[in-house]
Length: 109
Image (cartoon, rainbow, N blue to C red; front, side, top):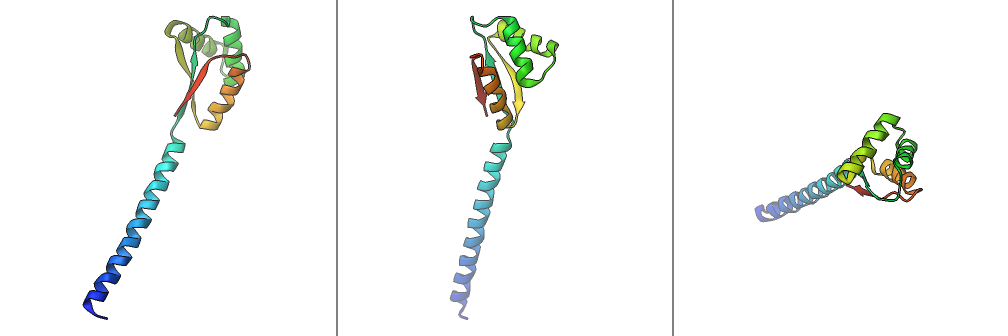
């Protein structure tokens, strides 16, 4: 093989490796983004009673009465509170339960 032809073959092969490396990095970035913890935020409103919010938080997250009370007070005093952090599917499930009584929520990734 001529030296120039050999050099071209080497460039073609290294270009393939670069493409594969770029693809691998992109797939890893997408995987990392999906595995990033998601946060479910509950916002304050003037419609629901403390008892309603506490009860729905316990139903949605399985937290204790004291945890639900603490989160409810935080929502009341600060206007919003983190009520769950984890995988998107779990945040979505909890969000659905909270919205059964029209609580105002947001999922952030």
